[in-house]
Length: 247
Image 1: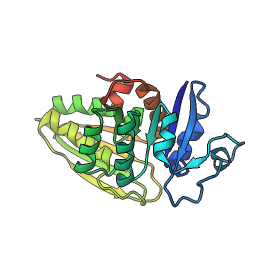
Image 2: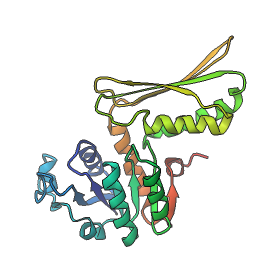
Image 3: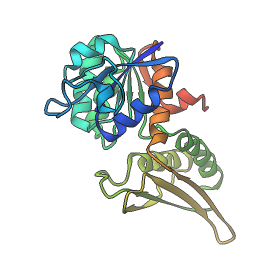
Image 4: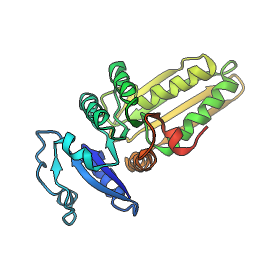
């Protein structure tokens, strides 16, 4: 049985992760963590989810609560993520980090912490997107010298970072494979979950590779798979490619 904690448990993403994790026979939620000013502190997490009592009380005491988990799933904001990484590092508790908008300082903190704990760190937990990385890498390697490459990404109006972490990762994959840094068109509209496209174009043909997320559940599914993977692993940084066995 994999015991998981959810950081930002009462937010949209946290509740989606919880709703899916509850259905997993080999997984149990043992910690529901929230910020200190959350109105849900002290409530039974089952009641927050609109379900029967779970016996898991929403808490802001990370140092206490992570003692009973095999992996902490983190989808919050950059600053609290860094703080939670430090706490988990001291305790050697594995993490799954899907927080976006992290700067170089935050990424360094995560890399430093990985010397003491295993971490799955990915700008996008989607299985489809991580397969897209592999496909785009190969296309860029083959076509990069003869084709123009451009990207586009669309997200909901509430998303703060632009381009998205996923778009930056796709761009990095293309540059590493071809030496070309593609232009990315960024759109923020409506409640779009996340759409990403890469277009390879020459005077003779066009190849377009796309991924459209239908709901935020796609990220929750990936996070749950990552939590199952990371529990019990040796310290280090792991990616969703490792989780999915993509080489």
